[in-house]
Length: 584
Image (cartoon, rainbow, N blue to C red):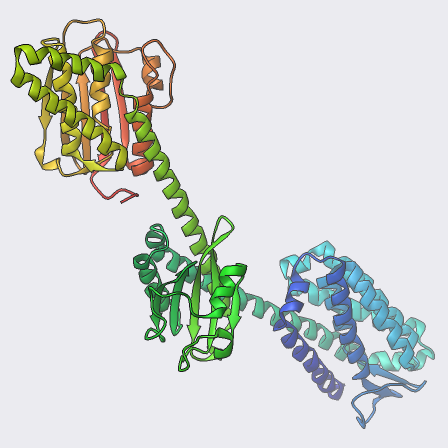
């Protein structure tokens, strides 16, 4: 029996080799673990049936209760008084466990019928037990969800049960009984234990590879996200030479490649590493491989300098993976990783490069969306600028016309203020951010005109921290607040006071307007700035526009508050962070 244990262990070695080879075969792994359709099941039936048949052919011949001398390794036929000890049920069990009932049954039937054709006094018994093993392993695997949980303990137990049933079937079916009993006594323990051991090893090899693959993917993901985190601020500026040069340097530093290049549709934007002497920026794309990627929008791999097709005769780059950079299903550029040796382009680096390509494409798409939002905000600012009431312009001209007769110097000064006001309007329509001083000049020009038209109607007090005058803020942020106070706060009053305050509070710039006008109801305050309203007093478009723009530019770092009490007055406060905006 000890000798049989050793021979069975040798046969289990074949299973180990098979498991190792299959674990490295990507197609097999995909068929084994993906959602299995008819095509996948057919593949698994072919693979595991072949394993079972080979196991039968390489079985250990038993003659009259003794191990037959191994004159040959493969047995195409077995005499009537002979039997074989083999690892066939390992293939059936694994097929049922990983492929489910259908695969297990089909492999069991194929392996069982094949065993019957080999002959021997246990041919029928072994054939029947093999078919039963297919039914049992497939059914129990689904019941215990072994493939999903990868429980090798349950798989080993199922294998032991299947082999035990085979021994019982041999005792019941094989004739004569005395010979069957002698055979079972000799082979039962070696076959049960070694086949269970074979199933365990098969599971461990597959599981080890899966764990290794998952660790590799985790490292790839970590590395890809690390690179993406370092490059996001640069790609948000779009595809330009400065951003692409920095990104290429980051990729080369983080990944073991000889060179990194980035292009747009027209030319090379960056090339870092080997080949810098002739893969120059500001030049048209030289390599035919890159041109194909830009045309087809597909990932292409080159494993020789000939495939890269660089026109420079002495180019040391001999392998490359070129990936398209996509924005909304359009190819806008390419990312190229170059190698001086073809064997340096491993599968791991290919997968990492593909991941980076997708991440970079997402970053570029986000940058384009950001740019579209910026253009939209430009349009909104232009719309806000267009809201200047036409009669304000004509009333201002009428006021200047009247002053010309009585106060020429005053008329001239007022005309300069009107010029400053409209110049600020035009500037605000063209720029996303302006110095705070420009916005204050805009407010002062507006107030000068209004106070000339309505002298002594209201008093304006400025409280300014001049050290903040160079801070960049969105245009039309403060002026509309003052205009609102004049038109709405004092609509039914002959006089009033407005306080305009600019100050620093911690790391925030605070812009505040406060009036002692008629105030508003709480319902109005809740809605102002959050949406456009329709009312006799106005639409609230200016406040809504300010609210939308500052949150678009500064995100959650910006605040907008309105506090108002009926017949007491209104306070509007804007807080902006004293740091770079998302669009700078």
